[in-house]
Length: 110
Length: 117
Image (cartoon, rainbow over all chains, first blue to last red; front, top):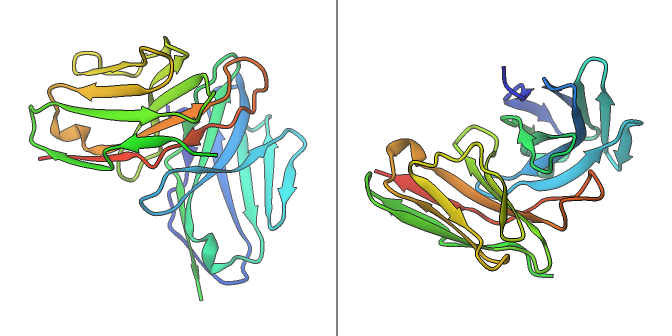
Protein backbone atom coordinates (compact mmCIF):
# COMPACT_ATOMS: atom_id res chain seq x y z
CA UNK A 1 0.00 0.00 0.00
CA UNK A 2 1.27 3.46 -0.88
CA UNK A 3 2.19 5.83 1.94
CA UNK A 4 0.08 8.61 0.46
CA UNK A 5 -2.73 8.34 -2.06
CA UNK A 6 -4.51 10.98 -4.07
CA UNK A 7 -7.05 11.00 -6.87
CA UNK A 8 -4.95 12.12 -9.88
CA UNK A 9 -7.93 13.82 -11.51
CA UNK A 10 -8.02 15.79 -13.70
CA UNK A 11 -10.51 18.11 -12.10
CA UNK A 12 -11.90 20.61 -14.59
CA UNK A 13 -13.92 23.32 -12.91
CA UNK A 14 -15.33 26.68 -14.05
CA UNK A 15 -14.02 29.94 -12.67
CA UNK A 16 -15.63 30.80 -9.37
CA UNK A 17 -16.35 27.19 -8.44
CA UNK A 18 -15.41 25.54 -5.18
CA UNK A 19 -13.30 22.41 -5.46
CA UNK A 20 -12.03 19.99 -2.83
CA UNK A 21 -9.22 17.42 -2.90
CA UNK A 22 -8.64 14.61 -0.45
CA UNK A 23 -5.49 12.73 0.31
CA UNK A 24 -5.21 9.60 2.47
CA UNK A 25 -2.12 8.39 4.32
CA UNK A 26 -1.41 4.90 5.55
CA UNK A 27 0.96 5.43 8.48
CA UNK A 28 -0.78 6.46 11.67
CA UNK A 29 2.58 7.72 13.00
CA UNK A 30 2.52 10.51 10.47
CA UNK A 31 3.09 13.81 12.20
CA UNK A 32 3.11 16.68 9.75
CA UNK A 33 1.06 17.35 6.66
CA UNK A 34 1.41 19.70 3.74
CA UNK A 35 -0.10 20.76 0.47
CA UNK A 36 2.30 21.69 -2.32
CA UNK A 37 1.46 23.30 -5.63
CA UNK A 38 3.35 22.30 -8.76
CA UNK A 39 2.96 24.18 -12.03
CA UNK A 40 3.70 22.43 -15.30
CA UNK A 41 7.44 21.77 -15.67
CA UNK A 42 8.20 23.62 -12.43
CA UNK A 43 9.26 22.56 -8.97
CA UNK A 44 6.80 21.98 -6.11
CA UNK A 45 6.20 24.97 -3.87
CA UNK A 46 4.65 24.87 -0.43
CA UNK A 47 1.06 26.05 -0.53
CA UNK A 48 0.20 25.47 3.11
CA UNK A 49 0.93 23.32 6.09
CA UNK A 50 -2.01 21.44 7.56
CA UNK A 51 -2.49 21.80 11.29
CA UNK A 52 -4.60 19.62 13.56
CA UNK A 53 -7.13 22.37 14.10
CA UNK A 54 -7.40 23.10 10.39
CA UNK A 55 -6.21 26.30 8.83
CA UNK A 56 -7.25 28.83 6.26
CA UNK A 57 -5.28 31.12 3.96
CA UNK A 58 -7.50 33.32 1.86
CA UNK A 59 -9.47 31.13 -0.51
CA UNK A 60 -7.66 27.97 0.62
CA UNK A 61 -8.69 25.83 3.58
CA UNK A 62 -6.85 22.73 4.76
CA UNK A 63 -8.24 20.14 7.15
CA UNK A 64 -6.77 17.11 8.90
CA UNK A 65 -8.78 14.09 10.00
CA UNK A 66 -6.47 11.86 12.04
CA UNK A 67 -9.15 9.28 12.83
CA UNK A 68 -9.74 8.58 9.15
CA UNK A 69 -6.17 9.42 8.15
CA UNK A 70 -6.86 11.96 5.48
CA UNK A 71 -6.19 15.58 4.73
CA UNK A 72 -8.21 17.83 2.50
CA UNK A 73 -7.75 21.03 0.56
CA UNK A 74 -10.67 23.29 -0.32
CA UNK A 75 -10.33 26.05 -2.88
CA UNK A 76 -13.12 28.60 -3.01
CA UNK A 77 -13.84 31.01 -5.86
CA UNK A 78 -11.42 29.26 -8.22
CA UNK A 79 -9.24 31.46 -10.40
CA UNK A 80 -7.64 30.61 -13.72
CA UNK A 81 -4.30 30.97 -11.96
CA UNK A 82 -5.19 28.09 -9.61
CA UNK A 83 -4.68 25.65 -12.49
CA UNK A 84 -1.83 23.39 -11.34
CA UNK A 85 -1.12 20.03 -9.77
CA UNK A 86 -1.68 19.85 -6.02
CA UNK A 87 0.53 17.42 -4.14
CA UNK A 88 -0.10 16.31 -0.62
CA UNK A 89 2.90 15.41 1.49
CA UNK A 90 3.27 13.66 4.81
CA UNK A 91 6.15 13.53 7.27
CA UNK A 92 6.40 10.76 9.83
CA UNK A 93 7.34 11.22 13.47
CA UNK A 94 11.09 11.48 13.92
CA UNK A 95 11.79 11.83 10.23
CA UNK A 96 12.40 14.88 8.11
CA UNK A 97 11.76 13.54 4.63
CA UNK A 98 8.39 13.84 2.94
CA UNK A 99 6.21 11.21 1.31
CA UNK A 100 4.29 12.68 -1.59
CA UNK A 101 1.09 11.64 -3.27
CA UNK A 102 0.88 11.45 -7.05
CA UNK A 103 -0.77 14.85 -7.19
CA UNK A 104 -4.20 16.00 -8.32
CA UNK A 105 -4.35 18.04 -11.47
CA UNK A 106 -6.72 20.99 -11.48
CA UNK A 107 -7.75 23.00 -14.51
CA UNK A 108 -9.91 26.07 -14.00
CA UNK A 109 -11.87 26.88 -17.13
CA UNK A 110 -12.96 30.41 -18.14
CA UNK B 1 17.45 35.33 -0.89
CA UNK B 2 18.76 32.99 -3.56
CA UNK B 3 16.91 29.72 -3.95
CA UNK B 4 18.16 26.19 -4.51
CA UNK B 5 20.27 26.03 -7.64
CA UNK B 6 20.58 22.98 -9.85
CA UNK B 7 22.43 22.19 -13.04
CA UNK B 8 22.13 21.17 -15.72
CA UNK B 9 18.45 21.89 -16.32
CA UNK B 10 18.17 19.29 -19.05
CA UNK B 11 20.21 16.25 -19.97
CA UNK B 12 19.75 13.65 -22.69
CA UNK B 13 21.90 10.54 -22.64
CA UNK B 14 21.84 7.04 -24.01
CA UNK B 15 21.29 4.05 -21.78
CA UNK B 16 24.42 2.70 -20.10
CA UNK B 17 26.01 6.17 -20.12
CA UNK B 18 26.85 8.07 -16.95
CA UNK B 19 25.42 11.38 -15.79
CA UNK B 20 25.91 13.72 -12.85
CA UNK B 21 23.71 16.42 -11.39
CA UNK B 22 24.75 19.28 -9.16
CA UNK B 23 22.85 21.08 -6.41
CA UNK B 24 23.63 24.17 -4.36
CA UNK B 25 21.18 24.54 -1.46
CA UNK B 26 19.99 27.73 0.17
CA UNK B 27 22.79 29.22 2.24
CA UNK B 28 22.77 27.94 5.80
CA UNK B 29 20.42 25.03 5.16
CA UNK B 30 21.82 21.96 6.88
CA UNK B 31 19.52 19.38 5.32
CA UNK B 32 19.63 18.50 1.64
CA UNK B 33 17.42 16.07 -0.24
CA UNK B 34 17.45 14.48 -3.67
CA UNK B 35 14.08 13.42 -5.06
CA UNK B 36 13.17 11.60 -8.26
CA UNK B 37 9.92 12.60 -9.92
CA UNK B 38 8.74 10.35 -12.72
CA UNK B 39 6.12 11.80 -15.07
CA UNK B 40 2.67 11.59 -13.52
CA UNK B 41 3.96 10.77 -10.06
CA UNK B 42 4.89 12.69 -6.95
CA UNK B 43 8.51 13.20 -5.91
CA UNK B 44 10.17 10.18 -4.29
CA UNK B 45 13.05 10.66 -1.87
CA UNK B 46 16.33 9.15 -3.00
CA UNK B 47 18.69 10.41 -0.32
CA UNK B 48 18.78 12.89 2.55
CA UNK B 49 21.89 14.57 3.96
CA UNK B 50 22.32 16.38 7.24
CA UNK B 51 25.41 18.53 6.71
CA UNK B 52 27.81 16.05 5.07
CA UNK B 53 26.34 12.90 6.58
CA UNK B 54 23.71 10.61 5.07
CA UNK B 55 20.48 10.44 7.09
CA UNK B 56 18.39 8.26 4.79
CA UNK B 57 19.37 6.52 1.57
CA UNK B 58 16.99 3.58 1.84
CA UNK B 59 15.32 4.37 -1.51
CA UNK B 60 18.55 4.98 -3.43
CA UNK B 61 19.35 2.24 -6.01
CA UNK B 62 22.91 1.90 -4.80
CA UNK B 63 24.01 -0.37 -7.62
CA UNK B 64 23.83 2.57 -10.01
CA UNK B 65 23.13 5.74 -8.05
CA UNK B 66 25.54 7.56 -5.77
CA UNK B 67 25.49 10.92 -4.06
CA UNK B 68 27.85 12.97 -1.98
CA UNK B 69 27.93 16.22 -0.06
CA UNK B 70 31.56 16.34 0.91
CA UNK B 71 31.78 19.79 2.50
CA UNK B 72 28.23 19.94 3.76
CA UNK B 73 27.14 22.47 1.15
CA UNK B 74 26.93 21.48 -2.53
CA UNK B 75 25.89 18.00 -3.53
CA UNK B 76 26.21 15.82 -6.59
CA UNK B 77 24.04 12.90 -7.65
CA UNK B 78 25.45 10.41 -10.15
CA UNK B 79 23.89 7.64 -12.17
CA UNK B 80 26.19 5.03 -13.66
CA UNK B 81 25.08 3.29 -15.84
CA UNK B 82 21.75 4.87 -16.70
CA UNK B 83 18.68 2.84 -17.61
CA UNK B 84 15.61 3.86 -19.58
CA UNK B 85 13.51 3.88 -16.40
CA UNK B 86 15.78 6.57 -14.91
CA UNK B 87 14.12 9.14 -17.17
CA UNK B 88 12.65 11.60 -14.69
CA UNK B 89 13.10 15.00 -13.12
CA UNK B 90 15.68 15.01 -10.34
CA UNK B 91 14.76 17.58 -7.72
CA UNK B 92 17.07 18.88 -5.05
CA UNK B 93 15.56 20.43 -1.93
CA UNK B 94 16.94 21.96 1.25
CA UNK B 95 15.55 22.83 4.64
CA UNK B 96 16.95 24.75 7.60
CA UNK B 97 17.42 21.95 10.15
CA UNK B 98 16.69 18.38 11.09
CA UNK B 99 15.60 18.96 14.69
CA UNK B 100 13.11 21.50 15.88
CA UNK B 101 9.82 22.34 14.25
CA UNK B 102 8.05 19.47 12.56
CA UNK B 103 6.95 21.99 9.96
CA UNK B 104 10.41 22.80 8.59
CA UNK B 105 9.70 23.84 5.02
CA UNK B 106 11.56 22.18 2.20
CA UNK B 107 12.52 24.47 -0.66
CA UNK B 108 12.91 22.84 -4.05
CA UNK B 109 15.24 23.69 -6.88
CA UNK B 110 14.03 23.82 -10.50
CA UNK B 111 15.14 20.24 -11.14
CA UNK B 112 17.16 18.48 -13.82
CA UNK B 113 15.07 16.79 -16.49
CA UNK B 114 16.84 13.59 -17.56
CA UNK B 115 15.91 11.68 -20.68
CA UNK B 116 17.54 8.30 -21.23
CA UNK B 117 17.29 7.00 -24.80
